[in-house]
Amino acid sequence: MVKQKIVIYFNMKQIETNDYKLLFSEKSNVLPDIILETYRGKIYCNLLKSFIISCVSRLDEKIFTNKKSFNRTVTNLLASWFFTLYSDYDFNDDAFFPTYPTCTDSLKNTLFHYCSIHDIEHQEEKINNIITDLLNSYQLILDQLNTYKKSDFYSENKNNFSIKKHTITEKRDGENITFYKFKVVFKCKLYINNIRLGNILDNIIIPVEEYNNMVNRYSGHIINLDNYIWVILFRYQLLGSNNNQLAVLPNVLDEMKNDLNLSIECFASTINTSSSIYCSLYYDMENFFGSIGSFFNTQLIKGTFSFNPPYQTDIIEKGVHKIINSLQNSTDNLAFIITIPIWDENGKEIMANNNMKNNNTNIDYGDFEIINTMKSSIYFRGLRMISKNEFTYLDHNFHLYKNKTIQNTYIIIMANFANNYIDYINNYDFYNYQM
Image (cartoon, rainbow, N blue to C red; front, side, top):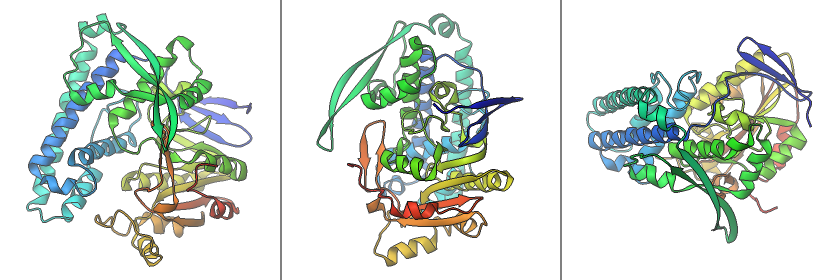
């Protein structure tokens, strides 16, 4: 077992071992509240429904069907907006709904990108109206949530539930995989009245292997274990972003741990992590499994960290600036292994010249200047460019290997000390998972 030295600085906790050192925002422990979570789910689904209606009524449905159905695309857009809100949220109020939804620039830009593929008149006016609709709907659900938390129904029934699980078997790549399927039984009258929410509640599953990994990391009272796991699975499935449980192959992460002393993942979850300590969205539930909360609420001082964020320009740019700032401020050896898409013009040209096509050619992200920022930094230690056909991710929640990834990929090394990490990276096989 790794020996940790823990020091408290005001509201920040410092953890230090021989391999890493960091500070994070510690919060009070919270018990899982299934009734409240279900209500959060209900109003999130209502928010999504109103957002879909607004997008499709104000813009042509065809602009959202370039790769997926419009419903899936708009669902991902709302989840991406939540990731943006989370990147600027201290999680001191509601654990799922950020209190002040003021960051809309990235969502607006994405909508403009979609419109740029088609000839849409009065784009700016229509997109501004979509944003206004969204913010009005969001404020309404915040009001509903606050009212619900104070209601007699909630106070009288908050413990009127039980969670059961049983095993099911499903085929994945010709292999039988055993899952736990969870069923929440409500002992009070709840009006779900939403098809999407009902489908989510009926399909809370996790591979038994991943469940056992979660159990091994769990530090809370055993009586609450399945309740915590249910909430974690529910929240991430509620967001509905296709790829929020994708992670670099476990065998590659194991190689990084051995070769590069990789210690901590900057963007992970209790479901998909391969680390004993990691950053994730929902500290209130996930801290019992090793999470230190949002990457943006940490100070990273020493160690080797993997940075595999949601593939959003705003999250990537904000995260890279935080990385550079951390490298500037640290007097210890600090390194980051960065996995991000090849969106810059020069990178796409290089891949095209090597006959490695990408899937994002219909949407122009500009020159994605953050790549040049990294390359010109004194902390840049090298990169590898990998075709989407040579990179496999694992969806830990549903045990799905995705080896036709959405984007060509950069692996970039940033560090404040000289190293040969890129030599190891160049020899890794990011594609084959049956090893």
